Length: 437
Image 1: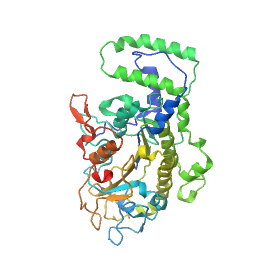
Image 2: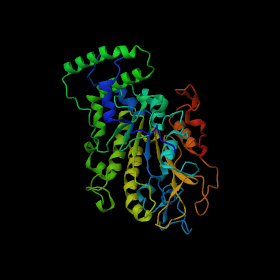
Image 3: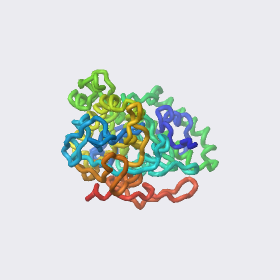
Image 4: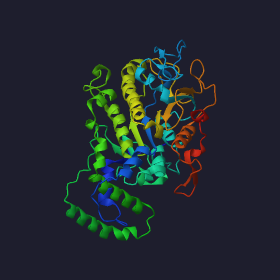
């Protein structure tokens, strides 16, 4: 039985701060508590490449959202509606229908991993789980390749909102996901010490740990030192305001569904607004220069009562996702920001005896857009009842390769794992050519 070793909670707030107490002080520089931002850095922030992954934990039924089969015995009760692109989508996604000119539905996904842990790992890394190698996730790869775009970025380059992500693998803890709650309350980053006392503690830490660092313990001491220095900068950084979505104007909060809305359907006025806040936070973090943000929206493991669940859940997806895309487009950021919507797999075309759908990876959909990718289209197709892909199939590796191309990352990049094995970026995936036609 596979036990995932590369699906940690990520660099949680607690984990991040533990490095202050336990990190190597290797090459520890003087602590600088200034946060002035140069105009040139502001310009870099506006133009940098970034990626936002909307992660649907549990495996959403894509044939009830993006690839409906009306009239088929597998089709379910929902009706497809027209969009601003060529593809029809579910009637419970009317606001996304207005944004589909920016997005492409890859309807010919065909993968093999229909177990939650294995599918999560595979869709995040492009590799099947291994007992010998921990592969880096999307976020870690993008952070590694693009972290230097904004030199004065003090927020970690890979932020996961609302849940943990897959870890950095052999790229090291510098590129681990920094996990925050969707309410933006980043605990354990509060400055409780005066500067002089903090500096004294750092000097003491340096003298204690220098011998450890000198023992040739590999990359761990260097990674710890980098994380320590990042933490010290982050504790007093003005960039931390990016996590505070309540700073936005009322009309923005209403558009994302954080206030107002229909509480009976889970949006606004005390409803389930975690994903909404996460989407808005993602835009704010990208504006600050963060190259990769993952927003978690779980609860899609619908083995029973799927259609009742979706009637409530799809509006919670529709409003924030459409707001994020519209917001990025209006701000001139969508051309440089790639968006991915996906889960670990989909659900069976067959509807089971409890009016649910079970795990299914053979024929399903992923949605991508932004970053210069061509929206308004459906790529590939499944057959009339959704049980098989009838065009060229695409994989996790192919989606990853396409997104990296959109971000300007060379697909010739090759990493070296901890056991000295060469690892081609995106596992040598093929670019989905229709996205760039």
